[in-house]
Length: 170
Image 1 (cartoon, one colour):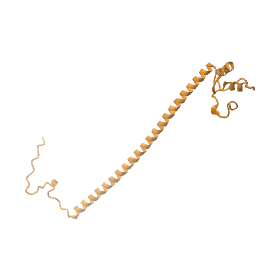
Image 2 (cartoon, one colour):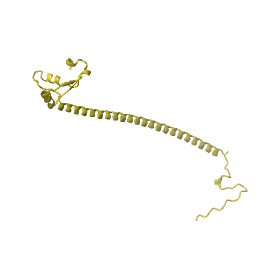
Image 3 (spheres, rainbow, N blue to C red):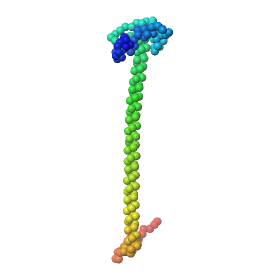
Image 4 (cartoon, rainbow, N blue to C red):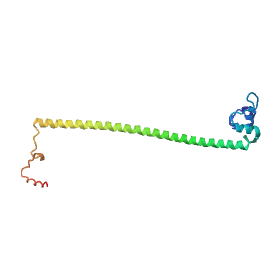
């Protein structure tokens, strides 16, 4: 291919049947064998060798051309499916990464709330213990006299009317 078309592989055609046949029939133990093509295509190349050049592209017989076009179409379909699957995989991978990041944020938020709850609970517990200690100190010191008007000691203030009778229980 380099001898015929130069060193720039971008200018080489995808398939050159004359070159395949020339190399395949150049002599040696594998004379008249063309490797890399189906047997049908190689036989068609030997029998027809109808090559017409249009610009830099070459065409082969109609049966080979149909097979070649069908293979190109199938390759294009597979390439499109591959590209779609690749894009879908990239989207799934990005979605998974986002979900992992959100999960980490949620766990961090939960840990922060738990720490805040524990700190608030400890503050309330300390305040309760301090209040309890103050009440106990006051009641033990004798400076805190009981309130005679406290509603739960059943003493009415002097001059107040008696409470109404309790309603019947039935």
